[in-house]
Length: 107
Image (cartoon, rainbow, N blue to C red):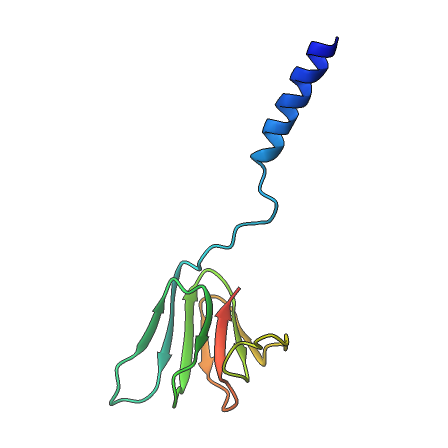
């Protein structure tokens, strides 16, 4: 009986080690495109993950990813003090960048 219990405990422990403790964060698939003006190239963020500064003079942002994009009024996506986003750009949508926008992230 002791051998059975030891074997069962070993099997359960081995199985538990294969289960991740937290969900893995994956980059968004696609791109976030920022339009500034006719005389500048588009700024393209491919498969974005994490926080990005919004380019100066940004006029329009298009979310061509499979995740929502959160736009913040500060340069570091809220930094150490979490702040709510000022705009959430849904996947496959675009819009005018708010004047107060400083950064965006793809959670």
